[in-house]
Image (cartoon, rainbow, N blue to C red):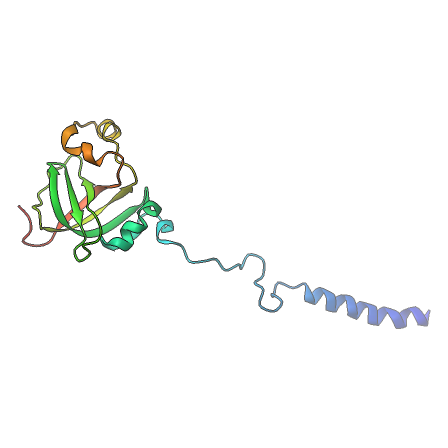
Amino acid sequence: MRTSRAWTVPATAAVLLALVGCADEPAGDEPALGDEETAPASPAETPSGEPAYDGDYDSAFYDELSDYDGEEVTVVGVVDEVVSPTAFTIVGPDDTEVGPLLVVDVGAVTAADPGSTVTVAGVVHEAFDLELIEEEFATDLDDEQLADWDGGPYLEALVLDLAEGDAE
């Protein structure tokens, strides 16, 4: 039986060493289960309550507009045209290559003049649908004035902040 004991000690040591190798510590550069590294969240994946984008209305923002659909953003722009008492367009403060973006401020009278700098916190929508907006907000908007924007992207304003001295 001495022979079996001679093999028991080395066998037990081998089993213990094998178990130590199964510990929670990762082998080499691999992370342990549950410690996986993830890529940083894209701007559109920012948790609710924080704007998915906060910056100038420029071509970089416009190019990624579809990524922000349904997300709250904050953009700074210059009022280009007042379309109606509840809608206006903005252009980039410095970027002249980006086209105007419709801003809809349902339920409020827009107190912005063309050329005014405005900060708009709102929700991005990929497609303007006049009938849907009128139904959702129980309002009647001017169909003629907003018809040109049908199907285009727009920003549903939640908060407007005019630069000092730009208010009507």
